Image (cartoon, rainbow, N blue to C red; front, side):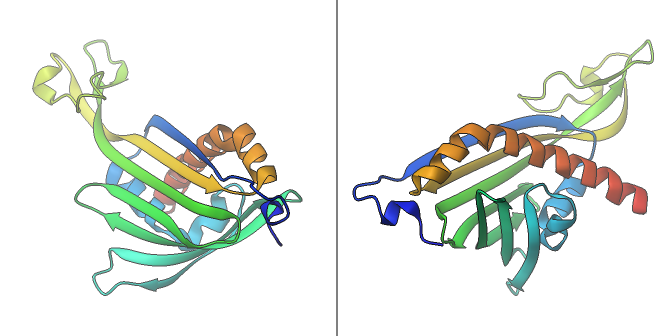
Length: 195
């Protein structure tokens, strides 16, 4: 499929960005494994019909993956991304290396631990200081750390030349990013139940 911009002289590319931030009821290490399991994306991720890891680096922290995404009948795209998983920094970064629709596509997951606290009255709360770092047990008088939750920041940036795709992205990027984070949250729960 030829991009519409090929027929429109002077059509400029547009860059669209969105960041989604949430607290999810899963540990960062568990979410990191789910995000790195690209082979499973087509089973649970909205708008993704195919996903496959093509090859891995010898160290195992980088891989190339093929994905088929789209909103039929508007568009469908098969593209390849290079993915870097950093277990120490708790990040997963991806950038497209082959695509016909996206001039560039980048995403980044940043995961931070946030303890869940039982307060004096037995209510469960997530530590309040999520943006400055997780509270320690000693900073929560009378509180007992129950489980580890995850402060998730998901950033996506797309540059596209096709004016039709630019128009669609302007309308749906925020919703799609939100649906993706929610899909990963559901997948974490499913995988935990399978254990």
